[in-house]
Length: 81
Length: 276
Image 1 (cartoon, chains in turn yellow, green):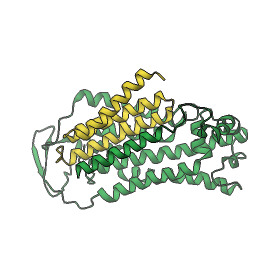
Image 2: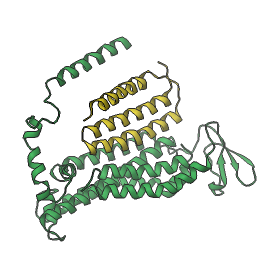
Image 3: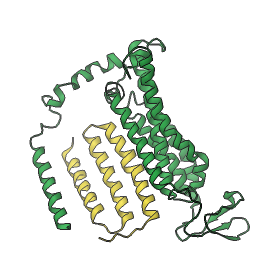
Image 4: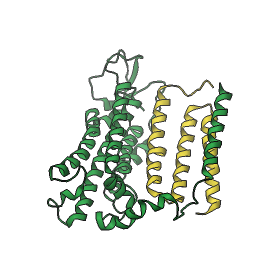
């Protein structure tokens, strides 16, 4: 484990998570959530849990982002709060 | 309300961070998780199941009942999305407009009607419709077979490398989703019909459970793949390896069917005509 890389990715995870909550555009939130999943996948790969990282990359960053985008496509991009 | 939520989140986060102080150091061989059953699995996996990847053997052999019920959970998620979203009424809320590609004529279709001519000759011109890009369409067309091949490889090679039924199934499902996103939903529905994707979902669970019942019939415990030894060549440990493979195929089929099923329901608002 390289601690500099670990720290960088952890910071990005926190920023992506905060950004996904703060952003007003729901499509942007879906994309940021995908980025968050991908950063988590990198963290797991760094920690040696390759199977979990693989699942996170395919399910978290891939399939669930598409589901969110499909839901946003049929509802609205704006949020009230 | 927002401030209350922020305080609760802050407190829970602080508690979790406080709790991690008591954790053993990363990779500590003396930690409780590394002392109890883990060494036994790591030492005996190769001998008992002939599977080098210990994650796969724990997931699909030693703890296979867990994985069977996980597959059932995925099936339940597909059924829940279907029951919540699927619309059987023909009536569409808004009229749709189509352009005939060859003649340039514009058609207005209302109340969920369908054009009886082949749909490939028409393109939708709604306000949310975006024109499809030629390059994206062609690149995805040639990429999808390789993605599907990789999905099959991930399912089949889960014994030796990271991967397995879940990941391979998601990759196979994602290839169909890519087809739908890059072309349109109708072509994806033509390649993998609604009924087939809905049938794949319970079929995978059935394959998993049937493997377990087969072991039961042959006189062993449920999902004890050692029972398959007389049917397959290679000895008792290889029988467990084959059993894991059968189960992984079931998981892959279930996950692929469910992912595509949920996507179709979500992307077309349960109407299965036009979508993302």
